[in-house]
Length: 328
Length: 253
Image (cartoon, one colour):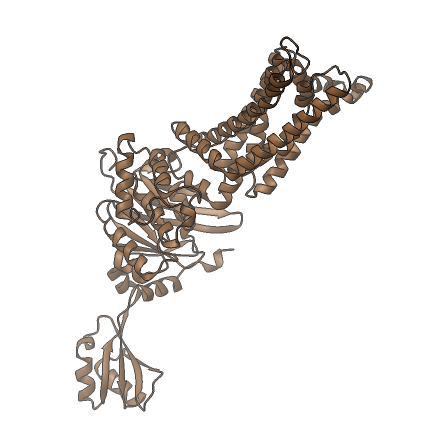
């Protein structure tokens, strides 16, 4: 780990970050933070400004306005100082094709100010951690599969034991086994490094991250723990049930126990009907719904509460983006 | 510049292992070997004011235009295209260190090519010459000419590096370098051949034209005349080009 220094309140701070390309605004007034040792998922649809934000934070691109700090060091005012605390793996993970994995990591370790006497040790450690030692250490990077190239990128990010790691789509193009491996690796960083990770695989983010930041069209639309966002963005709970009763009878039965309930028909087969019943999150009927429906004479074959995942939160958050008309 | 030595060692190693360097080296030696061979044939046919070595060095512009762009074209253009330059700049290494490391490694390769060329005239003298006879090539002319090529090479390589910084296409970088080097080499000669003295409104060009006479510099160096003005010209030109290259690398987004 880097030399002992006072622990900042936030490892990464983005404050009113804005990036404009002429009349096009890629990122606008974006503010969020990542605490030391925290793993944060950075989500947004294609073109939302995730990579632009990550590039500004990593110092490879300057913002139009706003402030970005890494471990308390301003990226704009002291880029070299900020880079000493940071490792960044860009989206397409560009690597030199004509170097062997070990040579590449050794070069990167030297450029990242790893103490010369520890370079070999650190290279061996990250190669072991990323499962590169046995199958890839002596091979040219140009001959590696996509999965191993991603591992080389992550090994590079971990080389200098940075305070902050920014990974832009680290699992893109990987098979399920490789994704599991990378996910475990990222999970192992919890508490040791602050990790900001962007990914399209929401299930993966939900499993790995402590917190999510969701942006759409360059603006922040939600941030916080998944549970908190679920409560904030999804004010209803819903149940799917399969029955022989019709919609009208079902609606009457539901409204009898919860006046705000609604019923929607879903595609069904085999003579059975499938419905979705929605109730307000805080409704007491949530716990007594099945019993109340049976008591009201509704025949039930199945009833289950729908589980809203990060995907639903993401969809709800990105739908509520404000200020569409302000953007060119 | 803390990482300069690490980057320079990496660049030299990459250059030594690159097919591009070997191809450029092969082309260079074939060109210069061929020119020297024909200079020897020509010298054997009729007496001449110039030795074969002088005649060969006079054609320094040919590898300068055909080989040097091949060495410089990939330095930044290829790294920008593949994105490895951006990845390199995420480390604490500065753009200045990156530019100087690439510049110096390319210059070293360029000088090594010319040192390899000396095998031709030295072998010729050893095999065909007689002691004390300098008709096949006076060593002082050879080393003086090589000094010119090494010093002017600083600017030539810096121009090639700058051209490679401004585009993502290696082919375009080579073409840009070719045009710039051609303009620079030809400019002095063109100025000299124009009757500037008779055009009053072009009188102000007389002084700069005198400084740009590339072939005159070669002649002076080969004759052992060490003039500080071309050294200042090539030195400041090099610093200017490399400064612009650093700005270009820092500004890439």
